[in-house]
Length: 426
Image 1 (cartoon, rainbow, N blue to C red):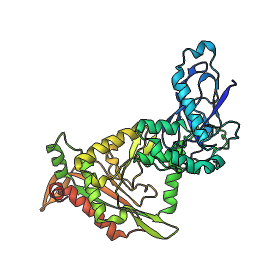
Image 2 (image 1 turned 60 degrees about the horizontal axis):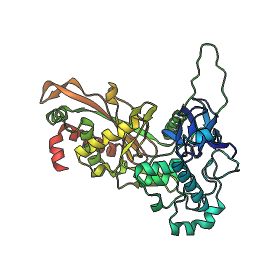
Image 3 (image 1 turned 120 degrees about the vertical axis):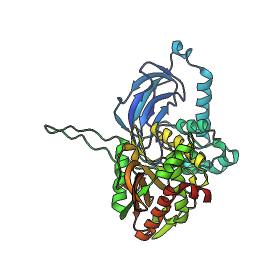
Image 4 (image 1 turned 60 degrees about the vertical axis):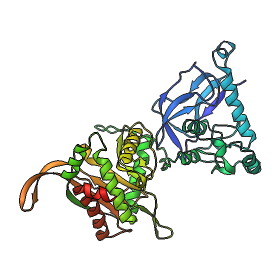
């Protein structure tokens, strides 16, 4: 048996490259089918990539920190020798290899570059429509043999408890791709295209050039698109959060402040649903969304990400608190969970008062809270020391005017100032 070249697979939804963060194996190591061999960073998250081949690692084709295009050689695996074969557990490898062959016989074809076929020319960022998949799609659906060739997709399904036989693939010929499993897990994730690689430019004296990672390029593209397409406007108001602060202190160790604010935001979005929407520019329509998936701006190790609490409108304050902690922890660990329909930004945790934020396209609004600090405040003609925060609201002026934005702002602000009475009505 000759050496087998494992090419960087299509990691999902239009991403054309990935950065090698950390190799998990060294040249000369013995690997099994489906064993993670490298950790790569895409525009969306950190991903452990498993090998579809068993044997001995002959060559690692990219250094740590290098950027590799989809379809380019990632790893060469040599056949295991008689001495090394004994150290490899044969049953899992044989079973996994047989799974690949079964999927190919079912009509998977050359869809995910680097998996399931041989002798094909890999073209980064492009997918060939497989004739076999089209010819056998009907019979495969009837037998429920899952059309999936990527170990990444199967690994995601296995870890999430998703039975691939129950899924209808959205890929060519019914191929099950990563987005199908993600939807089954109820964790939809936005996809942002990677910018094409540019040749390195020489540094001039006195300057230092730092390459932008795929994640940073994706963020740059998304923010630039937001600024270019959305005519945004910003309104802000100072809010007396003393009673909310006291409520939080009286219910410790109950929900955090952000959970209460999230509850008030959800209530305001029900009152002003236009801000839980998107703009269909082709049809010139505002599309209001029934479900509120509350995005949360989180500063993770790789940069700013926006995970979402799915169906936040169906949760209690305690439920929101639990989900907020879960998704923010996942985001800081490098896994973005969900795509929001509206974003809440707690920039007060960075000890600042205000921010003119950028809307997370295709959303139409973002609400931010600054730090809560003691300030002089006039109540009934008397100067008092109160817990004050500044709230800023950035909205798409195509969907609403200032009066509507002010109404939304006051709905949230009034709830912050009188939380007990508002919670009693929710």
